[in-house]
Length: 314
Image 1 (tube, rainbow, N blue to C red):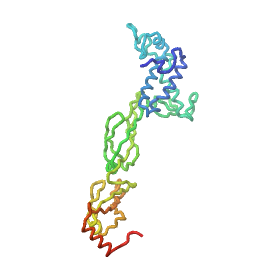
Image 2 (image 1 turned 90 degrees about the horizontal axis):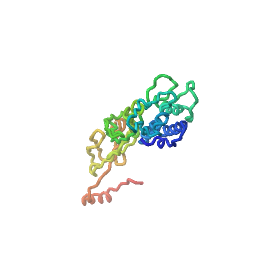
Image 3 (image 1 turned 60 degrees about the vertical axis):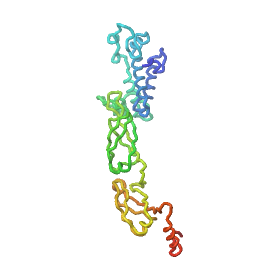
Image 4 (image 1 turned 90 degrees about the vertical axis):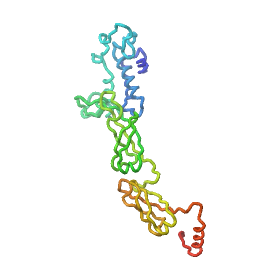
């Protein structure tokens, strides 16, 4: 650990009050439950806590100032035994450890504006970092605070979302877990993976990971609510004479009866083939002519234009 005075940002002549005040500011700034988006917050919080634990202990502080122990509290010369020299002095009268500090400054989080009330208030709620929850002043043993939550994003196909498939999710630490998508999952929906977050620095339960589901762009379908739109290329003779054509769906291709003289200005509807089995598939017909042109087709079209003209525009 670095020099504890440097960690807390105080001089070697700092009073107990100044040391306590410096630690309060750092603990509040880097507490993992308040800075879950900062990956270095946990490291800074732990460093500040260790520095305060050393400097708040009068005997250990004096030993450090005399060069008898290092910043970790370990002896610097032979024969020194921290067990006989007060190496662990947190429970002695007058000692005020980091846990006490945290409980003190965090106890005001449940009040308006974050101001701490002096003394216990009837019915008042306070956020206890070692209980991990808002409490109503109960004196009994409370569960210790959870670890920090993590965040992740996963992209899923429309097929995976519509059929509530089990997908692989990569967690912030690099671990991959299998997650079954909920029925009717929506784009942007968040899923909480309990116990997959950061471990608790206070011995409590690990945090969670919040996974945001994003729908990947589909190569065929365009989503319109629970309906899906798809463009289907057809030949000129299929449009004129009718045909049976294959149409893609989320569950595989199906056969569609194309009526003679199909109206390409209107969509054909496949009922119940859209998202979650609730929407439909709307098929837009697109007549595609032969590549490079065709002399016979051109001759037929000139005859048709001259002998059998018809209007499609006003």
